[in-house]
Length: 451
Ligand code: GLY
Ligand code: MN
Ligand code: MN
Image (cartoon, rainbow, N blue to C red; front, side, top):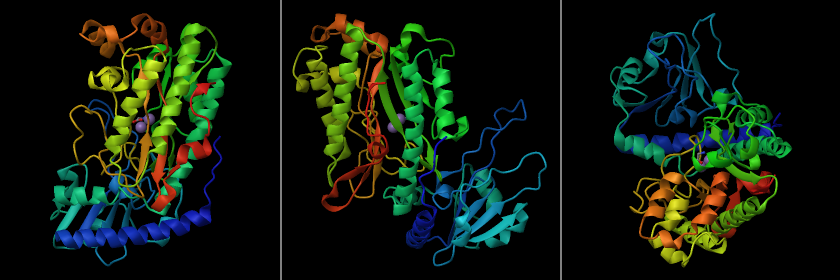
């Protein structure tokens, strides 16, 4: 089980400062845009299907989670400039289900708390006048505040912006989430090294080690043995003895702390053989590239520059491994690196795994899947996750196209059974000359490699 490393006294102090910061910044934003109040809905339980009576596991809305780590469907926060925030805490009178125990309850000291069973009991707590409601649907917004405007785009953009620069409290939560995920990666790596484990069994070991139920993970664990790693988000776990597929494992799995997400990927190998040794060298090379890219993090640098640098470096790795011919610039310009590394280098991270606020500008058309186009700035938290994959659907057109001669296809065919490689860390950008802090390597120094 994951031991918590959270210092409870420290986190309470940081949380107090976080709420003071949010009160000030949200207040300024609302006033600037002419709103008297903001209602942030936590969300409601959603039926899985109209044909039965089951609900999806509840996910609180990130705007609500920005204020407090409470899992309580039907609740909402009311923010009025210059006033103490109000938590309207839905506590239905039900003998069928009870709410989960809150991970922490110190939020109650930082806001007014008003428990309620029916909306009529709290309707008078929302001011009259111009009220904005952030809610899943206009119907829900109307149910909460008959006179409110639902998800006004200018305000939504401004609130997203308030989530880009993390407070010290948020960084502490993200740090702890990384510590929890590291325990899972360690357990999964050991299970894989022992051999004979299916993807499902590795997934279950991970859940056990991180003390997470499956719906509590920040995103569905990606557990990919052998060729399955060529599917970037492989979640259809194999359930039986993986046999020869079990020589490589790509594990992309996280954990949460008080609503904040960790997002970590490692790739490991086990066993021996000429092709596996070559693949293992590629894992080491991608790990080296990942660290080089982290070292390029600096204030004012466009994140897209790091992404471009990743393509250049992956070109060098492909060439050194003998997988391709030609210089890295040519490999990038002819989209050959794209065929091996098709996703973006990373994305903002916070209350959402793919967090908001860092992709307001579109990437260049040749970087279609890049989710971070910001200038790097202190307080941002993002992932750095280069990869190198053998994806048949991308390599086939390359093999049949005009640049086919630049690829060593016999070697590609030898390595394709290992699927692919991704190494992903979470980093926070520091101010001044401090550069960045790698939240993942702090708790899990080893990158990809032999399990
Ligand atoms: N785990 C999803 C991602 O890395 O973006
Ligand atoms: Mn990621
Ligand atoms: Mn990931």
